[in-house]
Image (cartoon, rainbow, N blue to C red; front, side, top):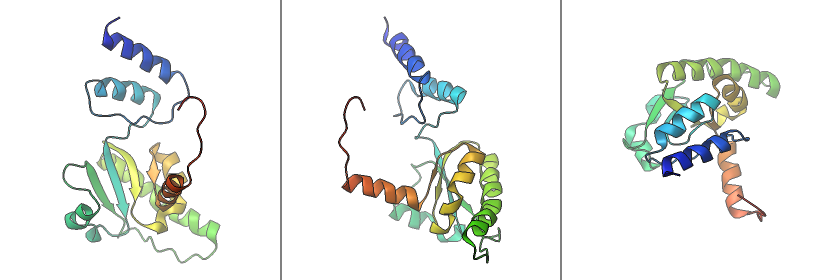
Length: 165
């Protein structure tokens, strides 16, 4: 069987199972993966990133370069400076809901303005409580400070794996 047919068969088989995301390198099969994953609404982690921040003026190209983001990394910075983000509510649940009412429409607007965004990164710790609501509304992965902490923790407290990975 030719390689392309083999890959097509394997990918089709994989997509019938529970897959929540694909980390795909840039290669000849990228277009195929993209089309098949779009059909199933599976995120691919090598597309444009939408960086949501409290104030876009503080994320200059120079500051982004300091953390490894330059022109070679597809991204858009989306500032929330005019959104009324600083909610004065002290009850945690009411505060989360108030923030969600600001962040969900902002994330949806960012996606409308930048339809090639495939993941959202929150630059500010203040935004983390809204991640689930934004993910549900946009269908995109949302990376926040909690994601970062879990990632770092998993690197220093490894689990033993059995079977297939």
